[in-house]
Image (cartoon, rainbow, N blue to C red; front, side, top):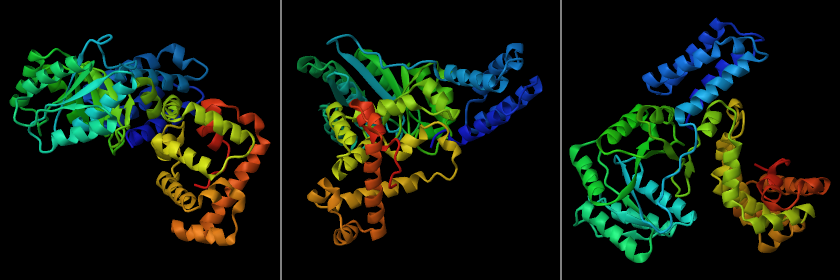
Length: 453
């Protein structure tokens, strides 16, 4: 997971600082020296690190800090504020023209960064916001690029304009805008070709498209796993064609996070979104303050709430809330809650945003995900009647279910026992279960119970 190593190192530094009753100037400088090394090892630009440390040190060695009641905590706050400023201070949206005016968005990037998939993800986001987007297949070089965009567009419910591979990209772009005007689309997203490296032909092609179509936003897609190369690519594109924002892909991978901390400072352009997986829904808005909070181990509860709000149906939540209040929920309800966790990115994704979770070294996130899979298999091996009526369980039924799920009967017994305990606990916690999203949904179902995974 991105920033894991950096987060561990920074938290160790701050643990030492906050553990002292008073801080001297030499304490702060020694701590910031370790912060500097941690940032450099995370592949943050040397120039950016130097400016960052100088700024933080200037504020952290002030008398108001060193003579305060909690100087260690003040230093942590100063570093947090510095990280937020470094990454852009506030959330930046993709700029769109008002009403039915057509907004043309040019998507650019090197081959392999995930540009075509990200283009479809953006189309899905804009559609969910009430826009009527059109995808335009302008990559006429990469084999199957057009087909890939069409498949992803279909999954998102967004039409794709294509003229095949026998036309110039600039002509396809112009025709796509004309098609959008005739068919009521108010956003056109141009998926352009990438190369293995920056070259003159690619840049000239992008310049030509921008000269002959009214491009309103140019968005660069870069691979976060390439570290400082991602920042260099962003700088080159900004210099040659001009960009309005950056989307970082593969931030869920084994990346040190340097690109996320350097892009804004080096290019002056904001990070708009970050890709956190292969699914078309795995695209998160980039909030500098939330990312800084994650890096410093303070969690990201607001993003968890956003994820929950996006997947939990209001009416279903209310209905479940009523069932929970009466302790009448069944295995179907339990399965639905597990599916909601999946839609939120899985248990590992949720726990990674919880405050202090990265300090629990023996936390087996992969094991939890596998255990959830086994629980799901057990429930799916039950008959419809057994799912509706948990009291039907007997030894012969459990044996059949275990065989169908491919698990040991002990796991079935454990699930049945803990499910029963959950229902008992519900009867003892009537005040916990109101209606609505927050009470009747994920928090209500899982918040205060020992789960079978």
